[in-house]
Structure formats: structure tokens, C-alpha cells
Amino acid sequence: MLRLLASALIVASSSGLGFAVAGGYRHRPRQLRQLQFALTVLGSEIRFRQTPLPQGLQVVASTVGGPVGQLFDDLATVLIGAQGRSVSWAWQQVKPCRGLALTSQDQALLARLAQVLGAGTIDEQVRQLELHMEHLQQLEQEAERARKANEKIWRYLGVFSGIALVLILL
Amino acid sequence: MMLSQENNIKAQVLPLLGCRPRQALEAAEGQVLAHAEEIRLRPNHALLVQGGGRELWLPLKVNEADLLETMNILSQYSYYAFAEQLARGYITVAGGHRVGVAGRVTVTKGKVGGLVETGSINIRIARQLKGVGKVALPWLFDKGQLQNTIILAAPGCGKTTLLRDLIRLISDEVGLTVGVADERSEVAGCYRGIPQLDIGRRTDVLDGCPRDQGLEMLVRSMGPQVVAADEIGCRADLRAVENVLAAGVAVLSTAHARDIEEAGQRPVLRNLLGEGFFQRAVILRRRQGIPALAEVAELPGRKLLYRGDR
Image (cartoon, rainbow over all chains, first blue to last red; front, side):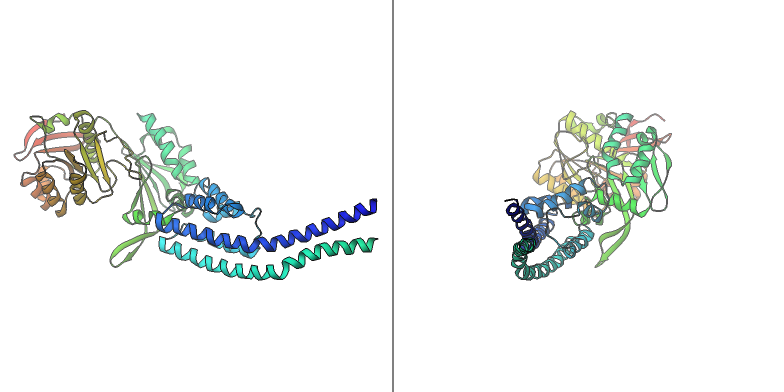
């Protein structure tokens, strides 16, 4: 009886681990897509309404929602209280991106964006946002490929390695 | 009055500054802030507070980071939203204070395109002296009619301050509708289109609008009985004043000139004064360092109506 319970526990935890890794592969492309949408929203706020950056970020947060929206809301909050310290500084306070499935490569891209946000004319800002969106698009495609290749593997790997472990221990 | 001025600065001006300059000003004794008229930040030099004819160097060497932080706060991290204002050289902030900015300027097609790097910042603190126009006000009327008036003085003698108070008195106490073409946001100190200084409850302001166009727009749109503009002196103004007077609206204005003689030497002012556009000239002079009303004269003819004590 005890043996059965232990086996179940091993299988459950290892498949949980597998599902968690798979979840990362599943969420990343979606979040990268949301980030592109967020930059589109920010771009139009800057271009058509000349909204100051903190308020623009809040608009993005309420439009996008979810963990990606939360990221922008956090950045806006830090920025409002930043007493003049740079956007990059504010960005560093927001990291690590809680609840996000972004890789260090994705985060480095966002950090580069933080360096240019707010500094420049409307045209420059829109151009910068477009550039970063293109880059995000590439990352998204790559993430999509990785998802297709890895998501199922990790799920099966979790379940089966759990079963295998149980069989060995038995 | 002095105390409230100090609180004003603490509430409205200090939060605009980067961390170090703000702390330096907070640490300075109360008297410094109470008399402050201008706060200047220049990289590699000490923080300077000017006011009441004195200057005070605070023990803080301003660096580039201080300027950058201050600009970040002033622009709310949004250069793009303020680029146009910065190209004019200043930003008006809540409370009507004006922040002048100098630095590296880009030029496109012979016109200033924008200010791209901040070299120095000057915060000019708006202070309203209510009641300074009370003495002059009665002399500006003839048989109950407000006469077209020009205020003449050298820079720093309180022209704009007097104009602002006259507008307030005419609007609130005389009860006339006043329109103000506030090209440089100095008279009403508008922030996002809303006057931050008290200019009376019957007053409308066109903020940032070129004087000549502003005066005519006001006459067309707001039905004023009086229009006011600061520092007239170019040919376009002449035409605008002509049109305004043709519409039967009285004009209040100011000009750079120590007295009527000096005004007579300036081409445009000579025309304005000579052709009988103005019936009253108010002249301000510093008396023992303090700006004061020197005389009110009738134009043309320069008959002295009022003379301040020497």
C-alpha cells in the first residue's frame, strides 16, 4: 500500500516537472505575441496622443492584461516614483519578470528597449518600437519552433521518467 | 506671504529636481527658498539660487546626472511629448513656474528643430504679487472707460507682474471680460491650458499663441471687452492692435523701454505711440532696488497723471 502511494507520488511529481517545462515552451510564444501587441499600443499612444510614458505604460497594461500587462504596470509604478532615475534603472527594478516564460534573450531585448524609451522625438520612438517589434517577431517564430519540438517531449519525458524510476525502484 | 511662497516652492518646484539638487535645497535654510526667484543648474558649477537682488551658491557641484534626472522628471520621461516646447526653450509646469533649458540645438532648414542635449536649466519661480496694480488702476480710466494702456519698463522691473495684476483687477473688480494672448505662458502661467496664476474670473487665455494671431482670435471667439498681451514690439503686433481697436476692444500691453522717450526711438513702438493707439503709459522703475510704479502719463502729450514718490 505504502509502496503504491510512493510510486504514485514519484510519477505525479516527475510528470508535474515535465508539464512545467512544457508550459514554459507553450507560454513563451504567446507572451512574445502579447509583447508585440503591447508595443503597438504604446506606439499609437505616443504617435497619436503624445501620452507621457508612465501613463502610456498604464494604458498598455490595462489593454494587454495578464502577466505581460502586469509587467508594464509595474514599470509604470516604478517610473512614477523613480525621482528622475532612468527608464533602464526602473526596468532593472521590475526584473526578474515574474510569472513570465521569457528567456534571458527576450529579457535582454526588453532591456535594450528600456534604454531608448522616452528619449527621442515621436518619429524616433515609433521607429524604435517597430524595430523591437520585428525582433520580437523573430523571437516568437523561434519560440514557436521550440514549442513544437519540445512541448510534447517534455510532457512525455516527465510522465515516462517517473514511471521508469518507479519500475527501477520496484 | 513669504511663508506661503516657501511652501509653494517646496510643493511645486522641489519635486521637479533630481535627487541631489533637491536635497541641497531642502537642506538650505528657509530664507533661501522664501526669496528665491530663479534656481539655476549648470554642470560643473555650484547650484545657484537667485532672488531679492542676491545670489546664493549652494554647496553642491551640479553634474550631468543631476541635469538628466531633472529633465526626466520635467518631461515625465517623454522627450517626444515636450520636444516642441523644448524647441522654444522652456516648459511651463504646474504652478505656472517656467523652466528654461539651454543646451545643444539641432537645426533643420535654418530653423531650430529641437534641443537634444541639456546644458543648463533655469527654473523661474512664478510669484504673483496681488495688489500691485491697485495704485495705477484708477488712472487707466477716463469717464468710466478703460483706456488703451501700455506698460513701459526695463527688464526685471515688474512689467508682467503689473500686467497680470491689472488683468485680475479689471476682470474681478471692474467686471470687464478680458482676453489674454499669452505667447510665452508668462502672464497666466498656463499648465495644460489652465491658468495657474489668478488672473480673474472673467478672463480667457490663449496659451502659447502668437500675440498677433492670438489677439484677433480672442476678439473673434471670446467676445472680450479688453485684450491683453505681453511685450508687443514687432510689426505684426501693430496690425493686430489696429484690428483689435477697430473692433472697439481696449488693449493692455507692455513693452521694453525705460520711458516714453526711449520707446519713441523704437520704430514699431514709435508708430504705436505716435498714431494714438494708446492713451495711457505706465512707467515702472526700480526704487532702492525694488520695482515700483514711477508714473502714469496721458498719451499723446505726456501729461503726467500720477507720479510715484521718489
